[in-house]
Length: 387
Image 1: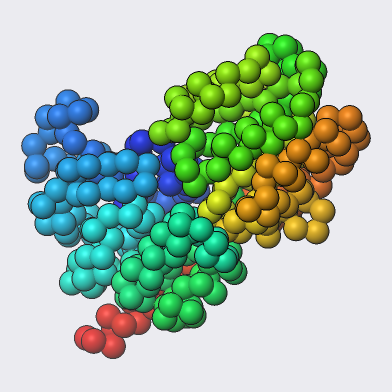
Image 2: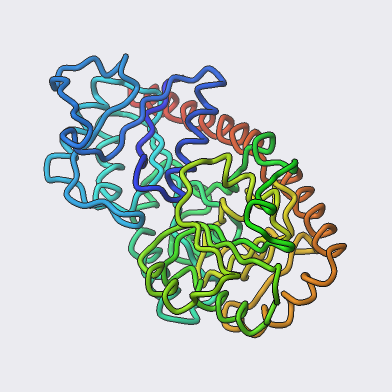
């Protein structure tokens, strides 16, 4: 089966990781995948003519005006170029890992004209309760997208909570399919690591992700400072974002390690393996891949009940925080985890078990394969009826 995958390759974010992991695994399982993504040819010195052999390239760049971790604005001609590329490629199915782009709203029309079945993965973070400006903005995104998503053949979401929210907004239940994020549990696994020694930490706590308002890193840092963890306890902040510089100036502390964005996946894994606990204080989330990666490494995890993260950690797989009381809860929890390594060890075991039960990449892809077969069979039946 030939899959035309429309997604992101940059800048780095959860959508990028999702697209890379899923398409690589599909290729390993014998699928043909052509990756269509927003990329300016001059950035990559692409000089191939428009008539390039798309079948052999495995990649189709589309022009854009603006691109960030959250939003993509395509150029005016990108829709036409996408339609032309799909017409030449003639894939069996189009899978759009939605990039929050105006082109998302045109895809159903483009694919309908070409008789191509269309599947979407809908990523935007959410909070089950609209409790602040950030979560309210995310809810508006769901309201904006719901009428469009109703015209896709299927829409993949990561949790029952996300499905229920879209159903309330009018997306048919038959369109929505819950396939949680999955993590590569052989690569992300418990194992030896020198990271704790290299960071001169007796006890190591880790945050990994964007440093932006919705991630609520400031509340984590306040809780850390209030907990007075003492010498030998380190908090590693892994990632970058718009708030990084200002927070780093304010929380200039020898026990807070600002490691920035780490391009080396193995180094990120080493840090997770060495960590005593992983902390995710977000206001809004979808289903955090960073959280699943930490759990797969056997790290004790603390996360807010935003999005589906509370669902992931429920029933003893981790510690769930209220988004509105992150600092005060961490002030109490962190010293307990510092003084009782047996608790972090047990929570780490529970976290790994939960991932192996529900959130493996192999399980994710098997569910995706069944969905592809179902959607393409429906498309063939519809085409036969029209004939």
